[in-house]
Amino acid sequence: MTVVGPFGLRVRDQALEAEVQTGLAAVEAGLLEATKSDVPFITEAAQHLVRAGGKRFRPLLVMLASQFGDSDAPGVVPSAVVVELTHLATLYHDDVMDEAEVRRGVDSANARWGNSVALLTGDFLFARASHILSDLGPEAVRIQAEAFERLVTGQILETVGPREGREPVDHYMDVLSGKTGSLMAVSGRFGALMSGADERTVDVLTQYGERLGVAFQLADDVLDIASDSHESGKTPGTDLREGIATLPVLLLRAQAAADGKPDDLELVELLDGDLADDARLAEALRRLRVHPALEQARRDTIRYAEEARAALHPLLDCYAKSALAELCDLVVHRAG
Image (tube, rainbow, N blue to C red; front, side):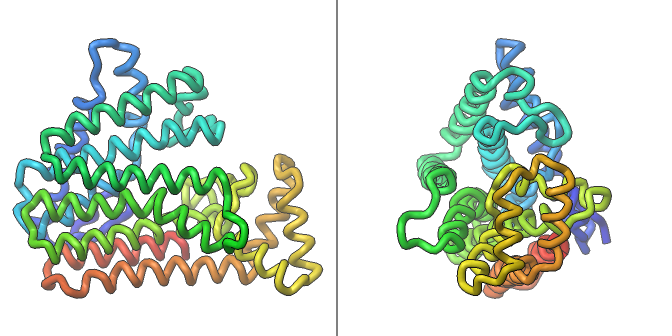
């Protein structure tokens, strides 16, 4: 049994492990090649986050999904490069919108070079992804365009907030389906499609990716509150401090509005205050960690991960299917 990737994915077959590792290495080389420019400064900016590392979760999903067809098919690695380039481009844009100063342990592009350079570098990455897509055929272009539309729609929905009469939690789940689920779904779809898998298998892995993507983001929501920075590598309360209403906070607000319990209302007031103060942030984290809203968010994470696992049921049993199921467990473990 071999561990693959930063999540500690256990691969129970040496041949599968070798294929996945070889594929991910090819994706890494493809990312560096795709981010080169005749202008040295553009190369530096475009490779800034590539070289900072990252989970490469989406390329991993492409590689595993490709095992249900010909994993050596010529479109597999380029499609994995496309989804990772798209993801990286959104990070450049997100950091500008969030005024983030750090990404993946290094200065964010906007902190280092300013917002204009960061935005334009993100656009450059989108352009390079589109160039690669053009060699994969019109169907791949259409799939990516539809996913990108969903991704941007999710970002806009997050920015403008829920429409009148829409429950904030339901609105938030729509945001996650667009922002995170859409590109994860494409990762599963591209891996299966490019490998020549049958239509049913392509649909299964698309649905799997969508649900796993939502579970993955919900796990991040829980981690922001529950994690120990030494164990997780995340700084607890980052989203709270930035005023981002993640699922545990939205569940708390809904419960406070419904029940009107003094302790809940007081906690909501604390969250609405200035959490730049370390003591106030620590108090907010302490109270949220024992609040039922956090446990409900964990249960929702588990539910989406189990839906992802259930989506795999029609596939024939194999080592790749076991690895995909293992990813569901790893996502849940992150939120545990």
